[in-house]
Length: 240
Image (cartoon, rainbow, N blue to C red; front, side):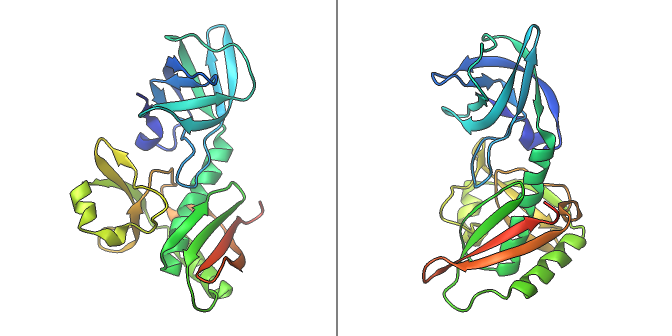
């Protein structure tokens, strides 16, 4: 069982850990993990492990059995033996870009105010698929609304809700393609704004920036029809 440090503080860049298992495919499982695994449209983190007498680059991170988080080496190499104490560090620029983009996608879903059919978080380009049968979204209007929310420097915070409470508030679940993330039976929610002035509130297990201003400048890319009932909207980090 791996404790997810990224849930405690998404801004941690390095931390100690201890190897508790290896997978049959050559992955490494630590007792605590800075590395966010692939899930919810967000790619797994990359980085490096260093220990006394060795080191290994981590190409990505995936979920393992139960609550295990598995670090996938960039290339075959001798693994630290079980019990080894390591220092784990992230490729921080990549992680921070994913945090900025993930928060921007939450804002985009609030602006579009339609059910979400899927999405992908990227370091330079991301996308959101929405259910919409009528006219295509107005690209300029969406961009202006999104920029205004980013400039508003709104707080981004996490909280938890019980399964029964979530069942009583089904509108919080924006998409049917991913199950709400659970922490010890509770479901994690990401709130943008304050309790008295909430812009967005939905279940999410991903990493996010602390305020919307940290997202920086975002550009709306192309908007595509994906069949009769769906539209795909692309986001770009300006200058990326």
